[in-house]
Image (cartoon, rainbow, N blue to C red; front, top):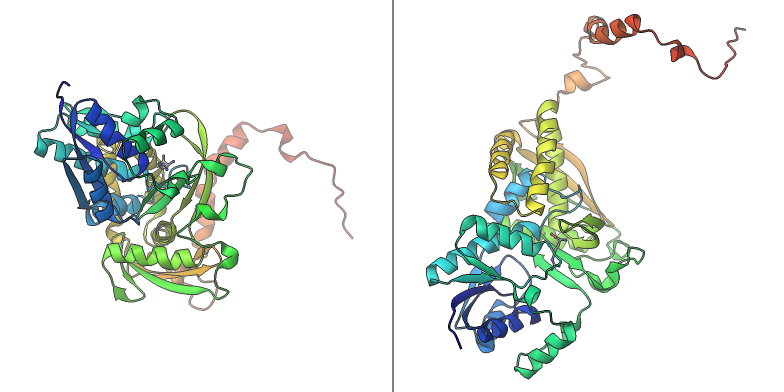
Amino acid sequence: MEKKGKVVLAYSGGLDTSVAVLWLQEKGYEVITFTADVGQTVDLEAVKNKALNVGATKAYVMDLREEFLQDFIWPSLKANAMYQGTYPLNSAFSRPLIAKKLAMIAQKEGAVAVAHGCTGKGQDQVRIEVCTNALDANLKVLAPVRDWHFTREAEMEYAIEHGIPVMATADSPYSIDENMWGRSIECGALEDPWIEPPSDAFVLTVDASNAPDDAEYMEIAFEEGIPTALNGEQMDGVLLVKKLNEIGGKHGVGRIDMIEDRLVGFKSREVYECPAATILLGAHKALETLTLPKQLRNVKKDLENQYAELTYVGYWFSPLKDAIDAFVETTQKHVTGVVKVKLFKGNAVVAGMKSAQSIYDLGLATYSEGDAFDHNAAVGFIKIWGLPIKNWRQKHPQKEDLKGPEIEISCQ
Ligand code: ARG
């Protein structure tokens, strides 16, 4: 058989990517696998052994949690990134990181190609390929699962024939992708938007009805847009996110159920559980309301939508994304303070906040003792503020303005 050189395969340890190892070998490639630890719950040692048992000549396993946090999660948090205002993009922004590592390993190993296990229907294929090509234009990207046209049954048969262990759980009705920013759940019963997501779809969160009857309060300290302490205790970011996933999950916080507009043209029903992301995005947004002025927040909000869109469609390495990152970074200088969050029966509600950077002025806001607002200044302000409208209406009077249903004006 013709030897084609090395290929680096993004390997999860599941059925698809295990079959892909063999399939690529049959096509003449030497297969090297790469598995990223991005905080998913999986036995990485077992994944590594499985890759080697299935026939990979080398199996890379990399702990990328810190890099994922610093270069992907925190920038997205600062940008309040949520696709369609709802999805915290946990799966979407893990793809550029995976693409980057695939390309780096490929260069190191002198590989001719990289490969992934995405199907031809999703957007992860788009993200991985667009990002890989952006970083190394010479690298070929192979997508065995998209190309081989196996049905699920044929794939299982092929696996059994070739001695690939097919776990009993392989017939899980869902397609899952998980990392420390959340868990994405697709397929099975979820495909019918009328069906409430079955309880077996969730593992990080309890149903709100089973959450504790007592609320739990937590205090999250932010420094320049990044959470640095929980309940007064300085904490490493990876641990902080892990803790928030646990505490939030216990209170049923972070379940998301949406109809999502996919990049590949159709709508799909998507379910997520993202306790830490839900808590942190809510707290961070709230702190910005206290520390940033209106005009800045308005422009930032528009850019946040662009940022989420770019992330979703695989344009992580685009110049527009870099420019938005730079803008967002300057806005975060003052986003420092403490947010109090109340967790109760599926909800995470901001219950209070304080900040040395606060531009909330009690003297101006109060209706009680200590009111420092100049009430007299309102008279002149209203006169000038309303001038253009008054002027326009005088020039273009509209007969209808004061018409309406007859009312009786009585005076007794
Ligand atoms: N719909 C989400 C996205 O496109 C999640 C994809 C998750 N992938 C999976 N294999 N379940 O970003």
